[in-house]
Length: 92
Image (tube, rainbow, N blue to C red; front, side, top):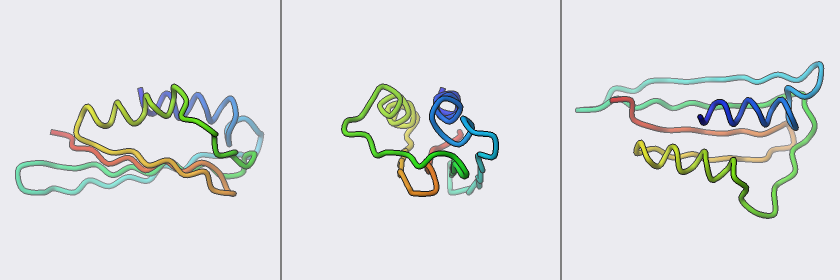
């Protein structure tokens, strides 16, 4: 659901809404005792500069709550280059 929300918003309003925009996804898995964690970064480039919302909308709440339910966290930044979303969660 989280990646679907990010992709939908990128297509409507962000980097994927313009011809030369793109999304970079970086991830790493770290094995810790008794668990493994995934750290994923979604970074939009080449799109219209995002505006920091005045309030948290449905999408932001969906992303944060979805990660919270699996013991993870989500951090969303609205940089001049584009939206950056950092996800951190367990995968066991």
